[in-house]
Image 1: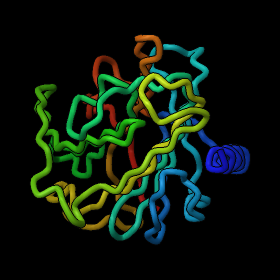
Image 2: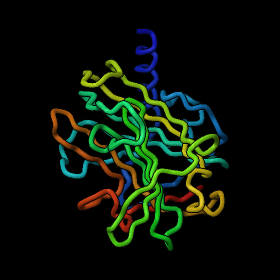
Image 3: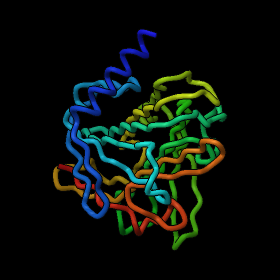
Length: 239
């Protein structure tokens, strides 16, 4: 109970005090940070330097479940913080490297080098199970591979927290938080060098939700048929 109260107070503070911005055609400016600890609650002081990015529903303009994201970068990798309002925890998968996109999930696509049609995809479920993939994409013909030697400093650090309910399949909830760190070492050789001020990548951010077996998806940059439309990825600019 104490943990729930503290998380609720924390997120209320973040939502009230952190500015949010709905971005579509504009570039996303990513601010630099020193490395910090991931705990799933998004309460590290470093997050105060990042604004919330509001992500819109792809199909339903009346959708009221809010989806927001913060991004930071350091000399060693990228930090992501998702806040997803929800009613039902629609997730049953209890292992990594499965078809997480078929249930509640958040997804990050990173395309560091535009001259080469291959990018990194990362998915995380509210139950804290993950799917990292390298995707080569040739005009819509895409297939993914799991990273080789996914261990040590190449592993993603990730945590999730449920607000207003239990962390169990089918639970009634109010929201869930996903916080994770993607090291540059994992996405080499797509990343030739550590990004610095002025560096530019392409990418997109998504969420899928399956309350009452109805699929609803959110995207930073709109896509038509699938999340893998890399030509429509937005611009990420490192400050």
